[in-house]
Length: 177
Length: 190
Image (cartoon, rainbow over all chains, first blue to last red):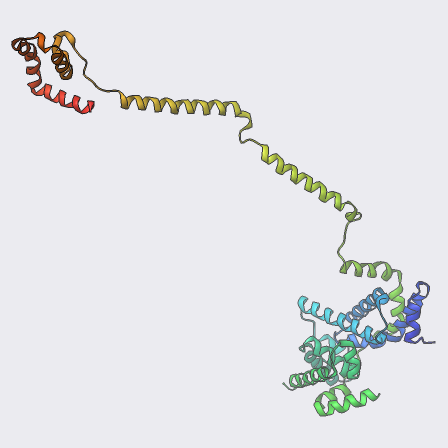
C-alpha cells in the first residue's frame, strides 16, 4: 500500500520508521525524478549518479524539511540543481559524446529519424542558459504547470512563461538552422 | 493529463515543430528492473558506508582526529614562542663576545681624537719668533724696551753716548733682510 506524502513525513521524523518512510519516498518519486534528470544528461549512468546524489542529499536534509511546500517540489528542486551542477562539471571536463544519445533512445532502433530528432533536440537544450533549461525540461518533458514550476524554482509565473517562450524560440531556431 | 493538453496547445501556438518533436521522441531507455532496485541499492551497505560517507566528505573538508582539542594549545604555544623571540631580539648585543674589545677601541679612538685636537691647537698657537741673541747687549733689546729704558734713564746719558749705543741696531734695522724680519715680526705680534 502506497503511503501519502503526509504519512511519509510523519514517519521520517522517527528514527525507527525513518528507513521505511524513505523507501516509500523513493518508490513514489524515483521514476519521475529519474526521467527528469535524464533529460539533462545523455546516458543512464549519469542519470543514475544524479538520482543517487539527489536521494542522498534528501536523506541527509530530511530533518530540515519544514513541510511548507509539497515534498515533490522539494525533491524536484534538489534533483534539478544536482543535474545542473553535474552537467556544468561535465562541461568543464569534456564535451560529452552526442552520438551516444542516438542509441540510447527507443526510437533509434525503429528508425533513424527519432534518434536524430532526439539528438538535435538535446543539442538545442544544451545551449540554453541553466534557468531556461530547467523551465523548458519541467514544462516540455515533465509537463508541470507554471505554478508547480514556480514553487520549485522560486520564480514568478510571469517570468517563467517568458523564460519558456524564449527557450522554445531558441530551440526552434536551432532546429531550423 | 490536464497539464499535457494545456502544454500541447501552448506549444502548437508557440512552435508546431517542437510539438512534433515532443510526439515523436520516445522516452529514454532504462535498464530492466532499474526502478525496483533503486531503494535496495540506496540502502545497501556499500551506499550507507561508502557513498554517503564519500558524499559527506566531498562536501566537508577532512579534519584530523582531535584537531580542535589541541588547537588552542598549539596556538598558545606558537604565541609564546614568538613573544620569546621578540624579547630576545631586544636584549641581544650586536657583538656580544667582543664587548670589552669594543669598549677599549672606543676609548682609544676618543683619546686619539683628543690628542689630535691638542696637537692641532698647539701647532697653530706656537709662534715662530726669532731667537734672541743677547751677545749684542743693548742691540738685542726690542725697540719698545730701548725706548722705555731711554725714557726712564735719559738723564743718565749724553746725546753722544745714546747715538753710539743705538747706532749698531739702527744699522742692522736699515739692512733689507732685517727689514723683512721685522715686518714679519710686526705682523705676528699684531
